[in-house]
Structure formats: C-alpha cells, structure tokens
Length: 167
Image (tube, rainbow, N blue to C red; front, side, top):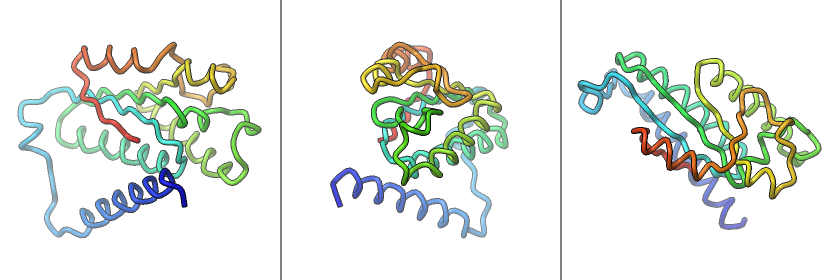
C-alpha cells in the first residue's frame, strides 16, 4: 500500500468513525455557538484527493453541511473547487476513468449533479484538465471549468468564504 492510499484510507476511516459516533449520541447536536449571529455560511471546499471513494464521502458531507446550516437558520453559499488528481474523476468520458473506479465515478457524477441542483457551484481546474489532456466539454453535468482553481481559492477567500481543504 502506497503512502497516498494509506492516507486516503485513514481519512475515510476517520470520517466514518466521526459520522457514526455523532449518530450514536442521544442528544441532538447543534452548532449554535459557532453560528450565533451568522446569516450566511460561505464555504469553499478545496478538493485535491485522487481517491474517488473519499470524494464521494466528502460530497455526502457537503450535503450534510448544507442541511445543517439550513436547519440552524443559516443560508449556505457553497463552492467546491476540484484540482489536481481529483479532476480526472470529473470526466464524463469513461475511457479516462480506470475500470476499477468506474462505478464510483458514476456515484460521484450523481452527487455532483445533486449538489449543483441545490445551488452549489462546482469548479474544475483548467490547468489540471490541460495537463491531463482532458476536454472540458466532457466534464460531468454540474461542473464548471475555470482557468485556475488557485485563482478561485484566492478570490473566494477574499470574498469571505471559509477555506476547507480536502486532500
């Protein structure tokens, strides 16, 4: 097992443990202390993981984040910026997806379409696409190609978005 696979596996295991431990609590949890007085929750998820299983999990958590903000009276404004190895799995061209990840890539495309329908802006790095020789026209529905997601990270943070790095 290489170091990246080990990191991704550890990350996924930690996320699942966290989600399941929170679900086991008899007390309804909230975020009222952090969200007190907050009307709009601006978040920028920076996804660079090359692990499609981790990406699906992260997108599920983004959905839960949106639900949690709304439940607590905060209007979410969410952007997801995919860059680096993550961009490969945004292609609608199945020949670009390793066969062992085809089913997961389809799940990922479904999650992306669902989040886009909820108003989430989803971006793919044009530099990465160019380096991978990907045609931006083949990106899955709901993904917007941008010139450079580093510029997106700079711009959205300057506009008050909280950066949430996911590697």
